[in-house]
Figure 1 (cartoon, rainbow, N blue to C red):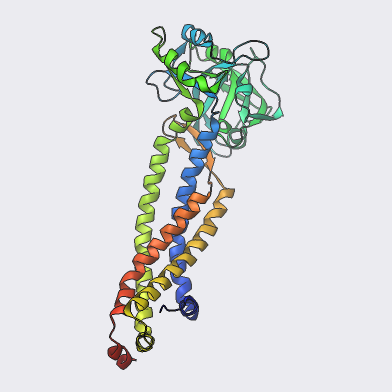
Figure 2 (figure 1 turned 135 degrees about the horizontal axis):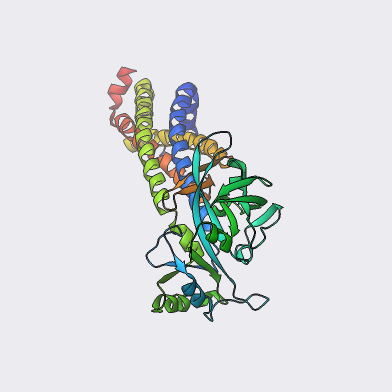
Length: 388
């Protein structure tokens, strides 16, 4: 015979102030735990959606980022002639030879500089990245000192708004358009004509070649051909995989920091829950004795107090998760450790994070309530009734 759940819940309601204070402490820990998971998920989502599954990125072998890579014109032309590359309506290969440089810009309203990616792209860049849409102005003209800026860059950095000018590479560049990249990493970039940017920065090699295969299923064969060609020193990756790899260092840092904070805070919260439950046991000695006299076994008392602690944890977990969900309306920017450039991303909540967060809160409740529940279960009937 088990103690009814409604009876356990009424005990929490009878001590509303204590329940609220303890649940509040648990909610704070859950908020931090969920926010870290959401931040990590937002980072992964931003970089994964940056790439298209059907696109392939060619970079120099052993280079982890485009900043470190170099693809000379001869190698780019050899790769561009591969039969597996899809053709556009005009019969030309679906590819973009791109160059990438970092410049320093000041944020609006301050003199604080940050590294920004300037990406030189080919004429088919927008076709290869359908998530990138012009939202204002027009696309830059090939051969001109014109650029288009991502929505995040235009909003946060001086000189990056439409009609404004930026000076880099010993030239004045006019911002003629703004684009939205659907909250992907491209929102944190500025695009211009690849050949013009290479001239301005005195570069004679591309950073990467982005292409689309005629049939996505031919990727393995294409990768084998490119990486096995003795004339090339290139590596082929699916674009989604390439950008996902860019999040490794930053994601690891966020995870370690979040885990450390969560462990420290959760220890405090579990201690608080334990103290609350010990106080509850001390105040309910007579009640425990009465329950035992009515025929409830030790295991029933243990289960009842454990359930009470876990209900308390669930309340805190739901409250903390509700506040954490509001973080989805905020955006966050930091330096990507692998590209050394500014990257803007947001918090993202999904079903997996909700499940992990609630399980985390239940574990805190179980650990915090076990010893008090064990003490309550070990009380002798006579001693409990006499103490009452």
